[in-house]
Amino acid sequence: MAQSDPTHQPVTDEQYDVMRRRISAHFDEMRQLMDEAIQADLEAMEQEDDDAETE
Image 1 (cartoon, rainbow, N blue to C red):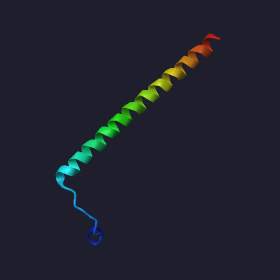
Image 2: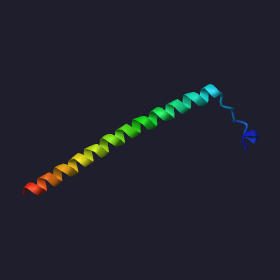
Image 3: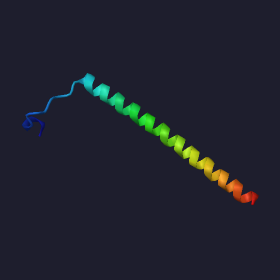
């Protein structure tokens, strides 16, 4: 398929490594944000449970 596409340009090893690092950094950042959101939800749920027990 790539051979029949006149716009196809091979990716160099350096370009591949740069893109791989960018993707990895992006996923690390998203994972951190999700962890923070999950932790906040868990804390909110625990607070709701504590509030329900004191009523």
